[in-house]
Length: 370
Ligand SMILES: Nc1ncnc2c1ncn2[C@@H]1O[C@H](COP(=O)(O)OP(=O)(O)OP(=O)(O)O)[C@@H](O)[C@H]1O
Ligand SMILES: [Mg+2]
Image (cartoon, rainbow, N blue to C red; front, side, top):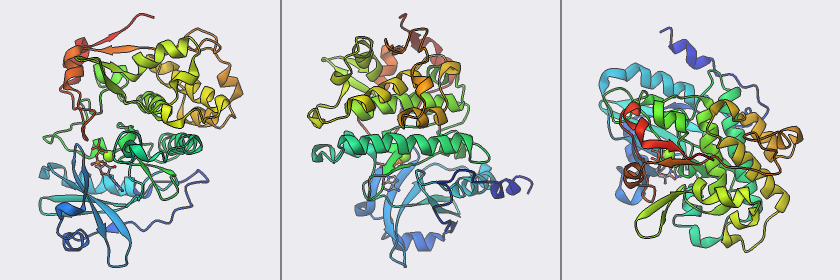
């Protein structure tokens, strides 16, 4: 009961938070069956590490996305409801609204607003990749919007929330291509005994901060690291890990590092943009990515600082030294994953690369000396 009190503590101190009206509630299983045509295969939007997501329509005509968890243990029954209530009360223009949940019998379902433009992943590498919807202005708007959503989670939501799985499939896009960060705090909801446990490393290889991958150390700065990778992906259209040649794979950082160091920022830009981009904004994004993706978590900026940088408000940060170098010569830290770990990567498929015990992975990650 004491913990239940927490769910009323979500306070909003950010001016963008009040814009959304809370219509959070508990759904019945019957209602969700009817909304999704009995979880019909035709309604399926996709599948992630926790289960399948279905499109649905409620009796009032509003469109929803329903995430049906595939693994459940009854142990953490109360925990689930409390944590989902906390997440459900978080409101911000760049955070995907959670409309409620359903907990009946063995079924656990989470209900969200449906996002008509699906995920950033689908526009960069998926079904919309050929459509050229992501012109430069939109990419910039998505970068700033998703940074604002994360800054809100880290600094304004009470209790503060660490996302733990920042990646392109968790940045959804509304009808105006405004970023809506999804699945924040979700990893924490999965109880012990299920596939994902908080003490284990969960995430997608390529986005993982080194200290998280090696020791399972979770903090806001893990999200900052992942956000840096997301920025590189957003401007380049490259995946965090890509096939390089026949047998080897390469991280986006390994690919970008020499270009960044040589100041060849234009070569980082997605060829699909056909040269249509703003050079000074590009520089800001590259600087932000370089700061975010530093190996040492204590050197990474906060998401609030990143928002200010991307908006061009943090001039002092831009001129601050990065990795001991003056910002004129930017340098990306490179982490090289063990080949076996790279083999396990399934980044072309939806879903997660889930690691075993974090400690067991220590040997699999090595820092490349710069
Ligand atoms: N509210 C939504 N509106 C539209 N599409 C959605 C919504 N929520 C999820 N999806 C889509 O459903 C698919 C599955 O999402 P899900 O979150 O389960 O997996 P994921 O993001 O790939 O991995 P993870 O389990 O780490 O979040 C994704 O392609 C996602 O873009
Ligand atoms: Mg997701």
